[in-house]
Image (cartoon, rainbow, N blue to C red; front, top):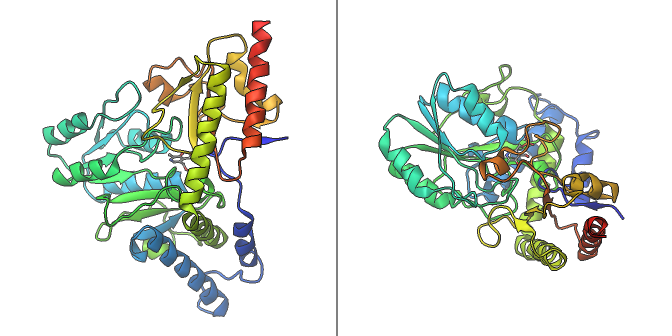
Length: 377
Ligand code: PLP
């Protein structure tokens, strides 16, 4: 049996999503910018998807701009904030995704970058954010993710939004791990920008969006045609957009059941590993304010622990040490480092989806037991 537990890196495409995408590869192949019937058909399909996506977020269609995913979206927001909105300071945290951290660093000659302090579990200190906001009146963009992709910690974005609004700062929350996994009501949350990426919720790769609150206009980072209301040049990824809308609708139509089911999987795996290995440690928040899709564990320092991911893989089990974008680099996880957890030794991120089963997790527990008993004997 092969077990896929790396759903925070990417999720398998849902069959229903593939089915709605297929006609747009051949029969309905028109370019949405063409004025003939082929083009009009494609354009209408994109606008329908935009309307539905906006509706699911309680936003207006004009506030949604389609992009290639979370990375492009974050780059667009940070660059736009600096070059278009006159932002002079970026406040972020050391555990953001690299698409935010590296974008911010690339702008460091233009803006001051400040980092919010975290507590020992990786939660943001809201008082420190408030102090940073109060101490400086330069136009500021606050970039704080809704949920961390490595340890699963959830930030109270309503609280951050209220603080940003009090100090007149722009607020961008990277919601790549929470769009289609949590209800997001953009009329309630005082956020100016959020981002989404279809492949994190059983949609296709290379498709995502930026939400930008009405009245705020970013600058395009790609120069060319006038697609996406002059915000993002280039022929639209129509199959991707259609697939993203379908994937998101599927998630939101069964949200509560899926949340309960997946939370059950996470609790089950933690409990069963703890039964065989009581000193396993949860990285990040263990119960509350944690993504129900992510479980990050540090195993006791026994032989083979550092080869855990490799050994799991040899047994057909796919998990990871952290962000897929950083694997293969020698740097180790910047998130675990910020939490002062020794660079990835024995740390594994398991991440779940609605397609996982308890039987799969039984197998994972069994294999972990075998791996660790090698040392004990
Ligand atoms: N932000 C977070 C929190 C993520 O987990 C990811 C993907 O790992 C991204 C941004 C980047 O998204 P994409 O793969 O669509 O560029």
